[in-house]
Every structure is written in C-alpha cells, then in structure tokens.
Image (tube, rainbow, N blue to C red; front, side):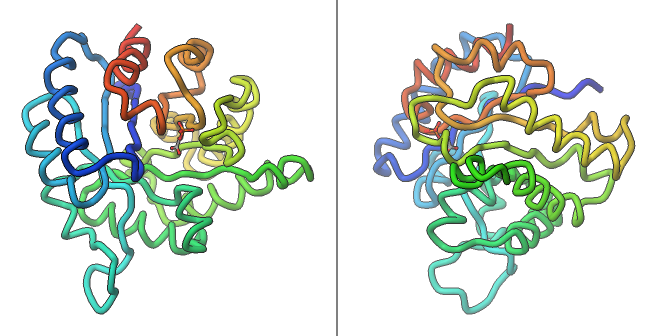
Length: 253
Ligand code: PGA
C-alpha cells in the first residue's frame, strides 16, 4: 500500500475554546470540497480536544493532541495521559521544540512518549530539528542524528509505518521564512538513511518524514515537489482555515 501524504495543523495555544470549536466547524464544512488522497490532522489544545473531535467525527479531518505524558497514570499534576487523550485523538505531537525548550524535554522523554503512544495505537508525530546555533556551529546533522536515533532505537520494524518524523529546524519555526527545500530535503534524507541502515530499504520507505517551519500556501510548492518530503506540519497558518485548506489542496495535486 503506498504511503499517503500528510498535512498536520498544530494549533498551538493560539485559540480560545470557542475559537477552536469554530475552526473545527469551518473545516468540517470546507473539507467536503477537497478531493482528498492524503491524510489531514489537526491538533487543538487539550481543553477543546473532545469538542473538536466531536465536531470532526465522520469527516476526513483527523484529530491529534499536542503532547502527552509517558506514564500511563499517577501523581503528575498538570500532565495528561495517553488514556485520557485516546477517546479523542488518533495522533499526537511529541518532542516539539517549544516543549523541548519550555520544559527541558529530553530525547529520552520523547522516546518514552513514543513507546506509550504506540502501545495505545496512537500515531506519534515526532519532531526533530537543530537550533540556529547548532546549524551555525556545523552541528546540525549531529543533532538530527542523535534525536532520530533515539526514536529509531525504540521502534520495531513494523511500527515504522505507524510513526511520523517531522523535521522542524527550530530556527524556521514561526520565523516567516522556511528552510530552503533542498536544505530540508538533505536533513530528511539523513533521517531516511538512518532508518534504512537499521530496517532495510523497503521498510524505511514506509516511514513518513514531513517538514515543519513557516509553511504557507505561498511557499509550499517546492516542498510538495520534493520527493523525499511526505507532508508538512503547519503551525501559525493552520488556525486560518482557508489558508490551511489551500495547503491541503496543494498536497493532493
Ligand atoms: P510554524 O510552526 O508553521 O508557525 O512555523 C510550525 C510548528 O511549530 O509546528
């Protein structure tokens, strides 16, 4: 079965509860006009997860969470468990650079989240990417190798088709300017090579690797055309339904 392209909207902490539900309603109405071949996922904040999931039930827009704890239950004030998101979310972002920065989330933390998500049949969308200092210091590839390796270490060959790796260079997030598509493709090829070394060509090809960082409908074309890029993770623009759907449309072409 050929792998499907993937467009993910990361709504971050941009919307009120009401705004999130309204955005869900707008997508529900408009997605019917798109002849969809790939997959589309939106990731609201926790408080609106259930309502947005209800709104989008039966449509071709799927719902994901923006984070999860690696423990299944316990005394973790403020955290949200995999069992708590499971009724509403079939996808979940982990390792986002904003979380890595805000909470000091480590590669090990991210791997533990991947393991618990796979246990519950939720697709982890795992973010990796270097900082501007790492890139300037010639350490971009090293960072990507370390982050991607710690994910591949906890994934078995069969699960490779049930995870997504999002290459999101931190310096391109919210920057208004994405990475150069060939620069992004180089990093993504490196991730693919790591998967090939470990799991062989055929299995590694099933892994979806997507790009994130300042994607807009205006700059998306070269990413769509790049064969090693299986989709995009969209932040800022994803809360604007018409723009988000324009990106979705371009990914169907
Ligand atoms: P951006 O965010 O599209 O606003 O750059 C992407 C992300 O953080 O996932």
